[in-house]
Length: 266
Image (tube, rainbow, N blue to C red; front, side, top):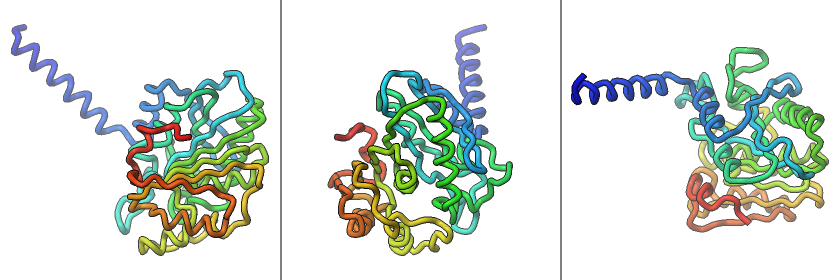
């Protein structure tokens, strides 16, 4: 085969790889990225839901486990249509976890990172009821199952965007929580929905309307000054009802820039 033939062969091979990647589902692409980063895929059973999760340094020494929670991903395929797979196309929390160290777990949300056809998965679990009591209860149960095998005494919850909202709701139900960190989180979901003209998330819990967390939990909420998806006003509306929460605004950041470049933040 001549040089032109070999070059043509390489182009065909690259095209085939690109075609396979394009055919992969969001869940499959997420799994590949997690594997590339060296994380171990595990399935945790929660309260009614299964949770595809990813662990790093699970047997490392230490009493504290950092638990990351991914953003809402793609709940809607369009204005009128529900997405078949809500798995994030860009895994921000996964990438943040890769820049951390020590024992870590990306705790999967119900029906994310896996097939969505098995009950009780339904579009409500990743649309209107994405922060519902049943979703929060199942995530807490899944994390407790992990802790029963890996006996960490303390947990730090870290959530990006909507994952931060879930992290707050979980912290209220987990006495093991010593720290809570949210990044660009819509912590007042009513104010957030009203700001964007969205339908209210009927059936979801709103951290802004809940009692404050225990004073024993160190609570930090980061927000970007240029964030149009979760403007600082949303987080500050939450903080007015939760005066012990520390809100840290970084003027030059938006919803995606530049959390990865600066992580972990102090």
